[in-house]
Image (cartoon, rainbow, N blue to C red):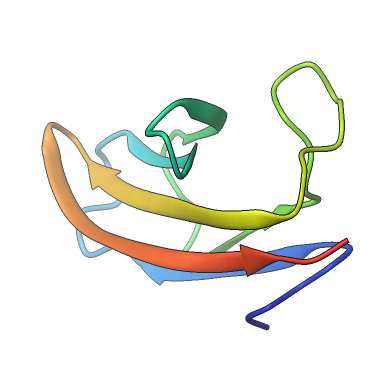
Length: 85
């Protein structure tokens, strides 16, 4: 859901299942907040859940965040989400 306040599920389809797939979440300043690396996804439809915490497990503040899907070295898409606390 957008906005979300406890967790958000990011779903994507990967056509090349043998490449490293990454989801990176950035704050409005462009700073990396959280990174997910998915090696060899088990199916075409893959889901990750972001719980609104950074890499150290600390909750991030309310605001606009961007998540970017990258497969191999190619950026596939970037989307915006709103976190409300």
